[in-house]
Image (tube, helix red, strand yellow):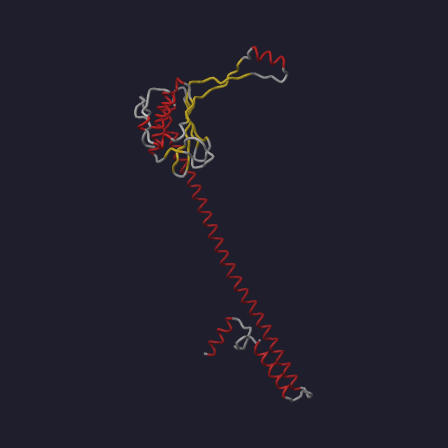
Length: 286
């Protein structure tokens, strides 16, 4: 980002979502009638701080919300129904900003009641801890994939206000990175589908050739059978005992018609000849 994000010094001109959180904190007064309905019905900003840090947290979150909207995000419920709270939606993702006061765990001496219970019940053992506020802010980003992937916090010399730019830079880079990964995956899917179709076409072409080859061998065998049938008819006719009666002549004519019918080299209707042979025969006849 080329422009440095500047956090305001005064609670003026706040974003409606921040204005509503300000009212919840009870800091000053606000005019609810000026808010648009789309902000009244939305969940509130995720701010969890003690009273001393409320004013500062409002100023920080106001800069965050306005910067997010300037980048093209719109605040509302998440695109996924299972994600609750207020989210910034944009570029096909839902992200959430959380501002809270960091705390540290401190060993707490047991109370008199706890000491008495520890003597009475053997299972009550171990030290007791309590969370102590550090007075420092932590700004977290639930990133594009729903994980707490980036945060900025108060340090000895640097404050959250000084690192908001880094948070948004990370957000922009992360969204671009994920979209490139998704685009690469989509490209791989398209290439795999193209390859699958190509292989299917090649397989269909091979099967067609193999089918024609099988048909050719079948026709050759059928031609050999018809040839054998004609030799058989000729042998029967040449037999000395072959009767030259009308019935015998009728049988010879019928047997020859069967040979001609199933002879793949004959172009007679009903013959078991391949389409390619039929085409060749029709061209020869013409």
